[in-house]
Length: 601
Image 1 (tube, rainbow, N blue to C red):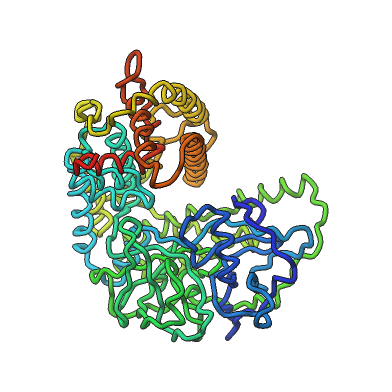
Image 2: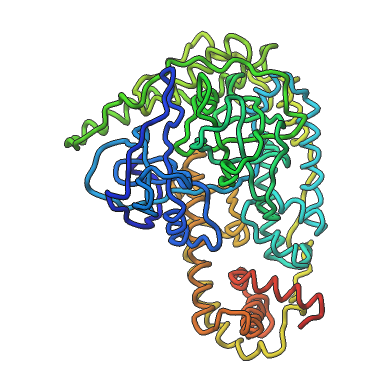
């Protein structure tokens, strides 16, 4: 996947600014698998290239030359003191192949907090470890209450918007005083997001856990953490408040995939120290111990893996199940590819044929899910343990070439109702996933956007003097709508609010994607195009305006004009179907709303 990952070029690094430092290895395990370091000065430069205003992430997932992995910001140094302020320290486990062709630093992602959920696999393992069904059903009930009311109550809409996405226009607007029942764009976005949540609840048992967070994993470069402990602190995605748990708090940590009973680990939150507090929005794992904690969780590493951390007391079990045994391997002794050999077309074809014939990952995962439900011991049953080992082999098949042979004698003869298998014998599951599925299937949650929204212009957003910008706003809106229409046609979409929700329920078969992964890639591509559209028209907005506090009211008048032409007022003719145009300047619309409600403008 090295050559096919989407990345953003940032800056070029001189060879003299880079070092290859040793991996941390012990007992044949690599504790630093896939992670290096970057100086604070270089991190600031990279953050600026990424337009991350006033925020320098604590870690970046990067690619440079033949190396790929994560670098954490570290205020120590691997160079002679004073020789460089911008440096990059890589480890051998990050180097996939040797190359002299490029020292361009490309960023694939960066450390940021993400909301935490349960899913079928995680619930199955938690249940096998003794977590009661009532815990999951209680969290589900909390979520359902919000979903039931979020389109008719601004209070409920705010509560749902808090965890619907990590970068949330709806939350920003509702927090500023907008009413969910009086704006078609906001209502439509929230409706699309809610529909996706309901679908994910039914198909994946995706339950939001407020007391949890997903974070990028890094190594404790200071070597102060003890085995059995982790350190993390994070900024709440909505409130931006820094959250830190008391030292000694027990938390459950896992990553996907999660099917072995040892894949969820109970660890202790370490005490904050000056050495550790430099890292925010990451989870820091210790160098110490017999085996790396990430490796204990379904063979995880630190090259970009995301870890779910739950600090919900209901999800903390008494003791850890032994992690799945593995054969330790040394990364330092792995030979690196030093030259590129010509690969014939037939070899590529043979590789893909072999891959398709031997890729049993989905079948193994489904069989494990069905058997874990049918067997009393669940994921701890010896048959499920064997399937967990097969699953691990299947996950690594693309890299190792070693296929996982599916044992035909273990093919489930019947399936639980929550798997919705229409071609096999089906029974009513008595375990947590069955109860969750039937609860969600029995929900009566409907809402018609057109019937429920008071579709009118919000007069509090109509500022005196804005009429001078109406003519220009109409011209710009036509350009915007044309570009948006092209994007929607490209993806065969007709619902504008669904496009902006970040959750397209189902892409057309015309897009050529028939898998979850393919749909996810389409969604990511669409999100990038919408983000670019928004960025481009924000630039157009500011192209003839001063962007400072002294000219704020003038900018708000222009934003008001954009709003009026989109929602009908000041526009000759009927109200246009596309109304997202003014929300390009959502920050200014929210500012107008707040000041108008306070009667300060």
